[in-house]
Image (cartoon, rainbow, N blue to C red):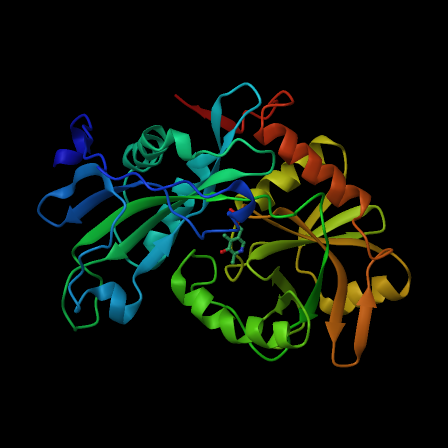
Length: 360
Ligand SMILES: *Cc1c(COP(=O)(O)O)cnc(C)c1O
């Protein structure tokens, strides 16, 4: 198989580079850089033909597995432009590991670590001038794996396309950290036991849209997902992992198979423990959270994810009323975590955990 040979990536540069948007217009995922990385996999050749090509539409057979039976998984990670001019990725090997786990759950063939890393790194090198320099901005990378074989029988595809695209993204928060209102979801479910909730796959997002639209109509930014059985246990917040500061402990739902194992979740737990903050990973009953609120012990609620890093919650909404968290602003622990991650990402403080990886 060609996978064993040294990787040589062919580069086809664009003849017509795009005009770069202004940093204040970035938003999230609205613009894409000039190039993309692609590689193909077939049963006889394995992974082959890694290349950088101009960003352009894919050519896909209308019968491709991804379009009918949802064999699609993705990753999301950021490249940061440090204050020293170096470009760094945050724990990219964890994204590869998770891609591999998602691929296994959906019976797909994943690229190996080298192909994944070289794809991401080579795209960043090629589109280096798309890595924004303003504080709070980053180049967001979206590695994606899809089943491309054309057939209408239901079975795992034999052919796959792996590609990486890149989007300059703005600071999630205009100036300073802001907090949002969240609706406690007890009608719709995102993921069921034995299902695909732990895989980063389109199907979970498709399942989540209805609840998220309904929450927005009610004036909430996102939903707090509860378990699909009885809606008694808390799982995630929107597309982020969720943390509660109750008394002097930080509590987060244990990974149960219905929860996406976030890189930021793992990093937040690691960082808190390094600060000697007590962290409990366990099933979190909604009732316990609301009772803690009643006793005045629910001090902070926040979500973690690559896009926003830390997303503080100032209110939980339900049919029977709403629960204000803290003083409605950003809590001290959310704020400390956010500042620490930002300082790490932009190379302003020492990377004691060895989480950042330079792209040369
Ligand atoms: C991607 C994702 C997260 C956050 O993962 P990070 O690796 O921290 O970005 C959390 N929940 C869901 C459902 C996700 O898709």
